[in-house]
Structures are given as C-alpha cells and as structure tokens.
Image 1 (cartoon, one colour):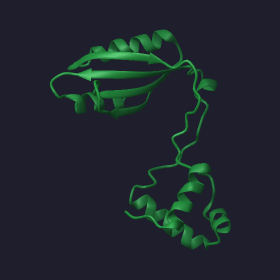
Image 2 (spheres, rainbow, N blue to C red):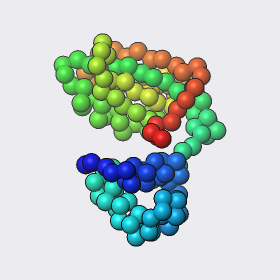
Image 3 (cartoon, rainbow, N blue to C red):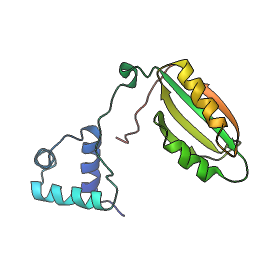
Image 4 (cartoon, one colour):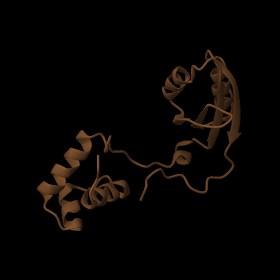
Amino acid sequence: MNLDNTDEKILKNLMVDARLSARQLGLKLGMSTVTVLSRIKKLEKKKIIQGYTAIIDHEKLGYSLTAIIEIIAKNDKIINIEEQISKFENVCGVYDITGSTDTLIIAKFKERNELSNFVKGLTAIPNVENTITHVVLNTAKEDFRLT
C-alpha cells in the first residue's frame, strides 16, 4: 500500500503517542476528526497499524538481562524452530537472518538462571544444532519506533 504524506503524519504521531485521540490528531494536523478516523481505520484494515501498546521500562519490571542469541539449525527446519521460539514469553524478537547463523533472538530475563534454562531449552528443540549467546552489558538505545 502506498502511503501519502497525511498517512505518514498520522502514523508518526501515533508512534510517538498512541493515546492521541482522532480529535487531537485532527487539531494537530489541521484535519477533521472524521478524516483522521477514516484514515486510521484504513491503516488498521490494511494491517499497517496492527495494534496499540505502551512502551515500558523492562528493567523497572525486573528484566535486567537482555540476551541476543544466535541459532544455527540443521536440516532446513528453521521456520519451524522460529515459530516455536516466537511463542516463548521472554522473547521480544525473532529474526531470520543472513550470515553464518540462521536466526537471531532478542529476549529479556530477570535472573541468570532463567537465561541459562532458556538457552538449554533452545538446544532441546529438534534441529537446533548450536546456539551462541551474547549478554547485553549496556543499552544505548532500544526503540523500534521509526520516528
């Protein structure tokens, strides 16, 4: 779907603050509330807007460990492996990548033993040949919004 300048402005504003009402967006962008609402509905119908969420500080909830885990798979079963991993509660992202590894996972944990059990569980998944785990020491930026 091709987005026009107005759709892009609506999306950028919602990425900054998803709690903005259609009325507030309309006032901010110089448009009617009805126009904003119809454009938002169109973006939702096309699955460009897939939902609305809050940005939370994971560390304040006790998730002080972020791990980046590489997976090497056997027998071209990577899609099945990625589907399984995507269902795990601690997993924030699963990426099918190029290079020497097949999949990259970003996950958050409260304690080291939780991370250890998670990685051991990954190696128990059929067709996972190897994992390489990186523990994040400091986070300079973590924001997936394109604003």
